[in-house]
Image 1 (cartoon, rainbow, N blue to C red):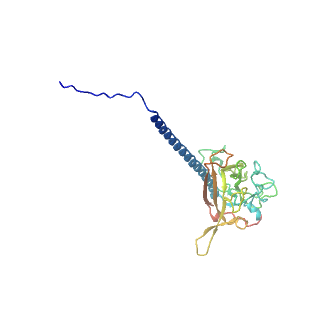
Image 2: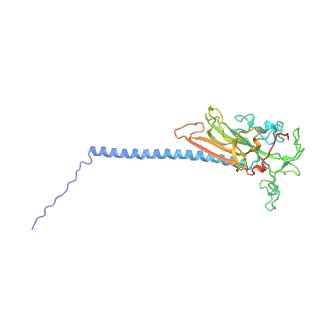
Image 3: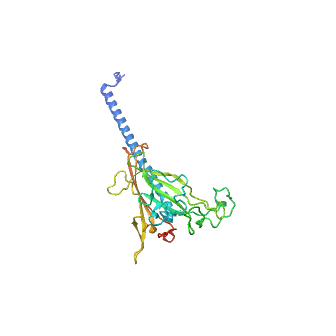
Length: 326
């Protein structure tokens, strides 16, 4: 019988050496550091993207609101004004909001300008007040879901002669106009930044031929409402930090003989205001994602935006005031 020799492997009872422990600890710590760094980079990238997306969404929302109001407008500045007052609101000849007739809440106070003027930092637009039969108005106490649609709904409402108290009664029938104002004002909580705010002053309430004849779709926005924060530009060359950004440009139609009409930029003045049919909105927004009082930070994002809008009714329905007192 042949004897079979077997070998047995002995297992070391010593465990890991100190070198092996140090190497494994180093590899583990290095892996944790890499994973941590990737997490930080991913988080910072997400925050930067979030700040940019949020800033763009806010700027786009403001632009859409402005463009919608411009498309429904029929006049820039105060249509009721005469001569240089055509660019002011309210003009002294405004039959709804002259000096003796303060709107609900009064006129906007500082940081709004004391004299509201149509310019590169303030947009003044007016649109007709349109009729809505109370029976067809869901906000009216007289609303009836079964009432037939009044064919006069949507028709502009006039200001009848002698319908107002005071010395500024219109001598003839004129359109009843809502006034919407967008203005860039300093942000008192963030140095070097500005706010875009909106105020609205609705047209007059007409009680003839019956109380409730005028139903306003657009109520007061007063005090003004902030619709965009973090504005830092654009500004005129050489401007200082406190100068207001020039976010509005005004476009007028030009017709050359034998050529299609085009639009060109014009400075608002009494001689050009009746020709203005469009507005360009240019804004640069800074968004950090920080607290409301912090305007700078490591994650600051700058968002530029351009948009344009034109009076939908175009030149055939633009209200003109050539300087003759209403």
